[in-house]
Image 1 (cartoon, rainbow, N blue to C red):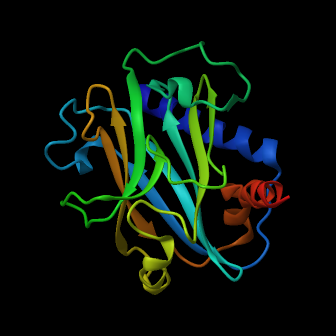
Image 2: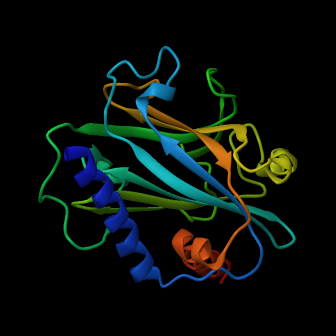
Length: 223
C-alpha cells in the first residue's frame, strides 16, 4: 500500500505539472524514458540502499541545433532543499515520507549499465545549463526537475557528441547515458537510471512531457 501511495503521488505530481504548463508537442521528437533506483548504482554508489525512486521522460528535438528535454519526478522524501526554484500546490510539508534523502547533486553520466562514467551534463551542482532551462518544482507529493540539454552545453562533452547514438537507438534499447542523483549520505550516487529509447512519439506523450514549457523557456531566454 505504501508503494502504491507513492506511485500515485508521482502520477499526481505529473498531473499538476501538465495542468500548470498546458503543454503540447509541436514537431517530431525522439522519445526516451528513465527509471531511477538504488539497484542500478555501481560501487561506490548506492550504499544507503535507498528505497525512494524517480522516473522521467525525455525528448530529442532538432531545429537547426539539438535539444534533449527531460522531465524527472522524484518521490516525496527526496529533499532538494535550496535547489527548489518554485513550488506548485500543495505546499511542501504535508505527508513527508519517514525515509528522507537530502540531494547534493544531479547529473547525466556517460556509461553503460553496470559501469560508472564521467559527468557529461551537470543539472545540479555543478550545472552545465548555460541558458537557465532547469526548473525544480516541489510539492508535498514529490519534486519534478525539468530542463534541457542543448547543443553547446556539457561537462567535457557536448550533446552533439551523443545525437547519433540517440537517433539510432531502437525501442527498448538502453543508451550509454544515465541519470545519477547524489545525496549527502551517498555522495557517489544514491539512485541511478539508464536512459532507454521508447516507441515513436504520440500526441499524449507530447502533452506528458511539458515540452511547450521548455520551448517557452528557450524563447524567454532568447528575448
